[in-house]
Amino acid sequence: MNISWIAVPCFGLLAVAFGLLVRSFVSWKAAPSGPVGNLDDFSAARYQPMERLLAENDYSFLAAQRGLDPKVAKRLRGDRRRIFRGYLREMHRDFARVYGMLSELMLHSTEDRPDLAVAMLRQKWSFTTALARVEVRLFVHQFGLGSIEVSELLRAMDTLSAELRHFAMPAAQISAA
Image (cartoon, rainbow, N blue to C red):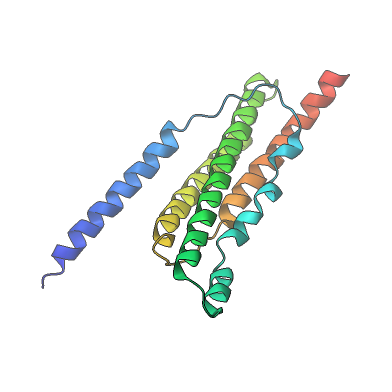
């Protein structure tokens, strides 16, 4: 069998996936932010349960139980995947809001911060690529394969939230004076 029969479709799929990722990154709009509210609402700690939600050790424990109906384990996997996707949507929404708030603060700032703009783009890229990887892993997970790592998403969320807190503090202190 000629290897090109396998390589060409795989390369095509990779090219399409990369194209979708770049399109997602370029066309991603920051969510309308409104006034900067409670900055503690945008903590990555809020999403810590995602790390355990799809952990394989729970399914291994269930599989070891005598008399367990496989449908129960399958339903549990599906329910947890659905909850995980809810967390993922909220995290994406929060990341977009934090990104929008930071963009707005930079726009109205009296000081130019190109370093912050570059850091924001890096975090946006990191979050977007990590989100794409998680989506692929979620797709594979529905077939009972693989695990899902969210630490990169949490790190990107935490870093951007910290930048917002750091940048918003002087603005909040100025407006309070």
